[in-house]
Image (tube, rainbow, N blue to C red; front, side, top):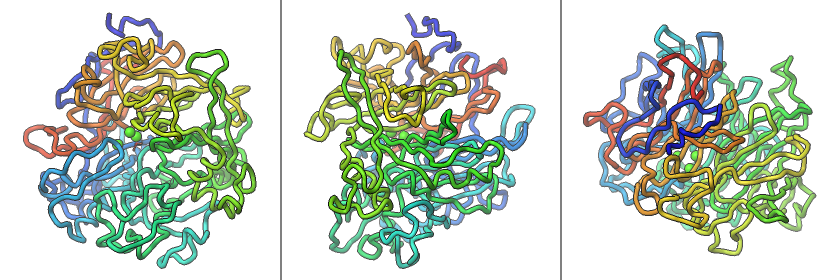
Length: 598
Ligand code: FEO
Ligand code: CA
Ligand code: CA
Ligand code: CA
């Protein structure tokens, strides 16, 4: 029977089958339209997108950025909204006029290979301009929400936009460079993966695989701290260091320490300066799930997406003030960072207890003796601090989502081929499979229903897998997975106001072998209590589905299609014909005007 035969009162749509088509497919009774695509101009005096990578760096700087990822919607009034969208990275095989096809890259780690064509300084400027964040003005028209060219909130933030550094690491020696001898200002943000939003109306954009932008042609010694963050002489193929000295490790050894942060942006003020909030720690950030705890403290859950890295939590020192938005502006500068440690349950089954370990200078061995001289160093080297306190190594923590009304939190652990292959990543706890290429979704309930409690109970909400290829093993997946709703590599997750859990995938789309029958990347909807899972949409060829935002009435859903046609896979999404494939934000409504998913 179809998964649609389930009886969760939360899920009211008919499941869509898997697909290998170059199309964006939504359930019967739903409509999907394109809101905006990479290269669409934000202003009327800017050129339109040119197929084949023909736009200049200057044009790209005022066009929608590439590889849209996490996004949040901010209402201005009933018919005006702002959509802030991350633009994570670029695909040089599509950004520039044709290059020889690069060898296969590996999933989300963006191990982009060097194109054959010699890049120019202008090419690197264009790449820098395609990164960052796009802020879009939306208006509700008779036929639905539309992007407004020249809208008053339209803004591009890219790899060269001036920003402030704030919080405990501001001004630390490790953040000082020739251009910024005080360690207080930095140019730009890039590899903006997922996101968050605050109840005081700001957008949080999270810097992920920032190591790939640094390199050097010189002989340099790489410190163990930089190495832990993946920074080395060989970059990920972006070649920025060849034309922009701050990315050359032999010229600016500290520039890499100025990336890997969560950045706060005021989307309602296009002239505002974004702020890097160092209290939230430096690592390969996925999203920033913010909860106002019942005691008023602000809690932010944070994943570090790399094999064997960790899951974090920030608890603010101050309390949220719903009556004075300005008073909340510095809440993310003072507080305590924690990292998660998991224990197996005494009674068997894949569940148990866990605790949050404080990452505070002077505690748990975070001392000068062990290489930590201040709280700033604990935050700049958060990964080293997490190891020092004995945090659990995880299967690539991606997004965290907290239930809107109940103390229940979910985190996607997307996959980890290294699990079980070394002493640091043993099989066990919430990471129960060696060579984990399917991923799982972790769930935890904080003690006393308080997000600032030290302890929690955890279990696995779903083990992704393939029940048609594997039987009687954990690789078949958990009981709530079947041939009709299977998937691999959960990544984006989010709750809607009704308590439906939405799950997006960034997985292997070969549709072969272990992944046979799973098709293109997809988005599913789940009942967080019964575990029922139903496929809601499928994406075009070689894309990832990532990023989502609902209007407050839950009647429009914005969803991101990222890198269709990557590595020159045969896609012409979204415009068809022989057009260049383009990352896009799609807009989904119900033909009867109802609530999405219900
Ligand atoms: Fe940018 Fe971990 O996904
Ligand atoms: Ca991913
Ligand atoms: Ca991605
Ligand atoms: Ca992701």
